[in-house]
Image 1 (cartoon, protein in one colour):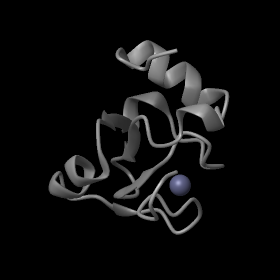
Image 2 (image 1 turned 60 degrees about the vertical axis):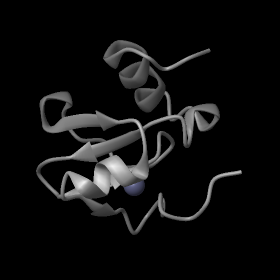
Image 3 (image 1 turned 180 degrees about the horizontal axis):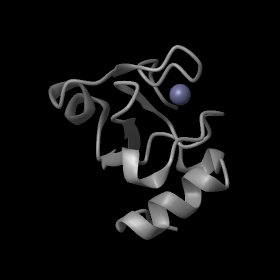
Length: 75
Ligand SMILES: [Zn+2]
């Protein structure tokens, strides 16, 4: 499974697919944080943007979510 498109990323995010953790990062515009796919947070899709890496999310001005800690190194 790859997560190249927004639809597959959104589907993985909705399913809290742990296999997708680290494959992409989900940034929530309303809260200013970014998350991994299995995070418990459930924002509206219109408030979400996807990034390919944590660096990209940080560069875009987001900070690591305190719940899912996306800044810890993935396996
Ligand atoms: Zn999170």
